[in-house]
Length: 109
Image 1 (cartoon, rainbow, N blue to C red):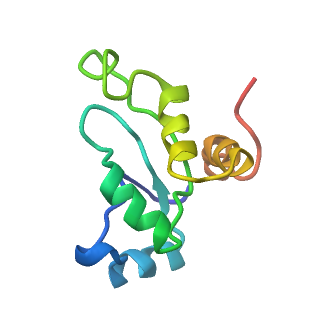
Image 2 (image 1 turned 180 degrees about the horizontal axis):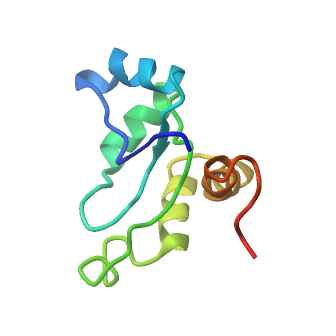
């Protein structure tokens, strides 16, 4: 199993920190994991503008985020559409996590 980091970080001034890029090179998976406070449009815009797209898009919906700001996975995915990602790229990143973590086989039934 590859290590995963939820809530992708950005560097000051909108760049991507060198240690984050190095982690991706080592195989660390960057998962959005949007819950109650782990998503910011400014941070996400900076990361996307720098060419650093998330490897996975997931939600961390729980009793404190189900009524906002996360609501559900479709709302989380739609935020990336609003930020300019193409629909096929958003859908691929939603399903990539399951395949990569299970050694290439989808765990969806």
